[in-house]
Length: 238
Image 1 (cartoon, rainbow, N blue to C red):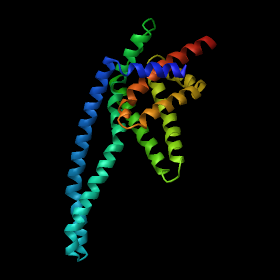
Image 2: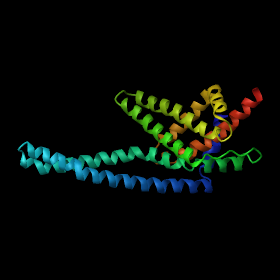
Image 3: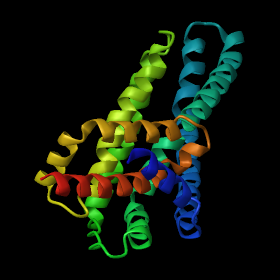
Image 4: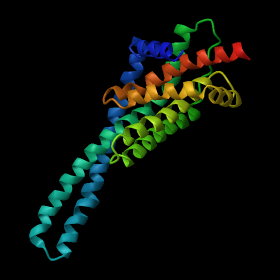
C-alpha cells in the first residue's frame, strides 16, 4: 500500500500539470525570500548595526567603533543567509499549501476517474492549512536543531517529529476532501502506523536541499493515494 502510493506520487510530481504548480510555488517562494531579505536587511542596517557601533562608542573605544560595526554587519549578513536557507522549506510549504487542492484534484481525476471527486477547501481554510504546514516544518526543524549537539539523536528527532506531524497533516488534507472530521480522526487512529510511515517519506524529501521544494507536491500526491488505499481497506473490513 505505502510503497505503491509513493511510487505513484513520485511519478506524478514530474507530470507537466503538476510542474506548473511547482514553478508557481518556486517563483512565489523566491519572491517571498527576496522580500524577507530586503526587509530584514533594512531592519539590521537601521537598528542593529548602529546599536553595536553606538555601544562601542559609549565604552570610549572609538578605534573599535567602525571595526565592530563592520563586524556586526558581516555577522548579521551571514546569519541572515543561514536563516533564509532554513526558511526555504517552510516558506515553500506555506505557498504550496494554497495549491494543494490543485494537486489532489489532478491525482484523483487521473488515477481515480470513477470515484466521487473530493471537495476543495475554501480559501480561508486553505490559508489556515498552509500556516499549519509552516508551523509544523518550523517546529520540527527547531526541535531537531536543539538536539544538534547530540550525535545521531538530531537525525532521529528530525525524522520522528516531522514524520508524525507531516503524516498527520497531509493525511488530514487528503481525507477531509471526502470525509467529515470524525471519520478522518477514526481513519488516522486506526491506520496511524501507515500514516506515520508516509510522513517519514515526506520528511525524507524535506531533508534534501533543493528537492525539499517539491515536498508539498509529493506529500499531497502521496497522501491522496494513501487515503484512497486506507479508505478502501477500511470499507472492506467494516
